[in-house]
Every structure is written in structure tokens, then in C-alpha cells.
Length: 197
Image 1 (cartoon, rainbow, N blue to C red):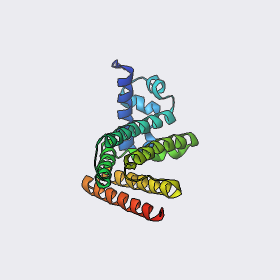
Image 2 (image 1 turned 60 degrees about the horizontal axis):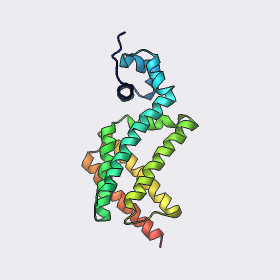
Image 3 (image 1 turned 45 degrees about the vertical axis):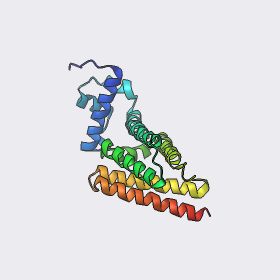
Image 4 (image 1 turned 135 degrees about the vertical axis):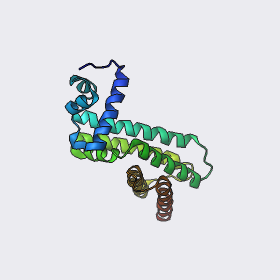
């Protein structure tokens, strides 16, 4: 087997792309480091050098998605949307766009992260980062505090994940997912405001 020499980061990105393809075509059960090496046409030690074990590979896949998602959320923070409604629209578009570009394999990868306590804790950290970004995006207009604030954030991220998955799987058109997510966020924020009085 002739292995094309790549820079370490380029090889890592290539392995992640091949791993996403395996999940997309065959599901997470088929994803092993040995099979990844075979499909990427590299020697078996190379995926182990990059990820350590299967859990490390799953975490790297989800981290890649999470990093891209957070980068898009930060773009939302940079844009002066002037109103809560425009901010919600921009956030919804960024979330759905990120889900679509990440591909339909993100959902199964997230589900596989519940396989162990370490994986679940890792995913919870990534979700907490998304929640923090959401709070920052909304902070010029509304501060989500207390139990009701936590419930509102949980509801928004849950709706965003579900609609993002439906859009990335082709079940919903992008514009429909964005519209429904925007409406869901507005509804949650109205319920939060009413309950916080």
C-alpha cells in the first residue's frame, strides 16, 4: 500500500471526511479505526496515531461539527441585526445552514456519543458551548436567567437540533426549517417572558 504523504492536519481532515462518509453510507456501527484505515487507503496505525481509539474518533467528528457551528454562531454575534426578530432569523439560518453542511451523519454521530459516560460528558460540553452562544446572541434583547431561562435554552437548542437534522436529511426544505425554527424561538421567548413576570 502506497500512502500519499500529507501534512498531519491535512491527513486528519482527510480521515475525518472518510469517517463521515462511512457513517453516511453504513452507519456508526461500521466505523472502526481499522476500517477507516482501509477506506482511507492508509496503514492501520495512522488513524490510531490521530484519534487513539474509536471514542476519540467519534469525539473528533463531533468536535469538527461543533467548531463549525460555533464559528457560524460567532458570525451571528458580529452582525448588528438591530432587532430581536432579525437576530433570531440570522441565528436560525446559521443553525440550519450548519446542520445541512455538516450532513445527515451528524445525528448518528451525536447518538453514538451517548455510548459511554466520557462521550456523553464530551457532547454535553459541546452543547453547553452552543447554549452559551445562544445566550450571547440574544443578550442585547433578552437575558435568559434562572430555571425558566435554562428551560428556554433547552427548548430552543432541542428544536434547532431536530429541525437541523430534518433539513440535513432532506425531510424539510432549508427555508421551511429556518421559518419554523425562527417561529419556535420567538414562541419560546414569549413564553419565557410571560413566565418571568
